[in-house]
Amino acid sequence: MKKVEPYPIASALFFIAQIFYIVCISVKLVLNNLGIEGFWHMHKVWEMILPGFSSHSLLDFILGLLEVGLGAYAIGYLVVLTYNFLNKKSVTNNQPSPKPFVLRFKVLFLTIFTYSVLLFTICFVYDLIVPKNLSMSFIWSWVLPGFQNLSLSNYLVGIFDLLIYSLYSASIITWVLNYFQKVQFVNVK
Figure 1 (cartoon, helix red, strand yellow):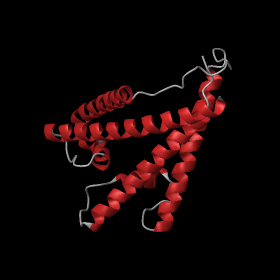
Figure 2: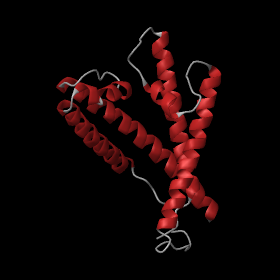
Figure 3: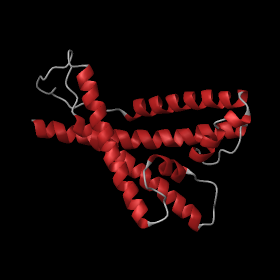
Figure 4: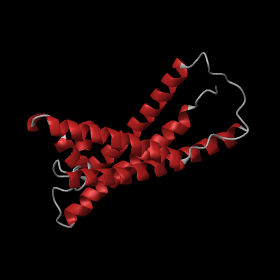
């Protein structure tokens, strides 16, 4: 097994996180300018995970952009270095294979979508069983646009949102990771 290089993974995560952050904040600003309140809550997620971020000024936006980028690079490097460390017995430093590794969009999309739908379904059923104060439906209303309560129509809205998120994630991850894998492969030759 070939040793995994952290740069392509970290770079792919960097671009994915930056694009996702910019899209989330931009959608909030556009909806606010159109007078639509209470529909898009992703900025609350960023406020929870980014220290000092409040989404009220340009400085906060730039601070969030910096934190997201650094966090993505750190996660990419930590994950790859941990993976290489745990697999050091089976990792060899042979010459690169004649072709770079290519991530397939369809496979990644189906993987992300299947996992997301399975997780969402488990959580949805959980929310139907437990009392309202233990329900996670408020999280779904933040993350899934159009989701409001626990009903079949809102479950289908959630599945549709997950389909869009999966398409978006798979297309960005596939394009960025394949690009950096190709660049690294060319540079190694």
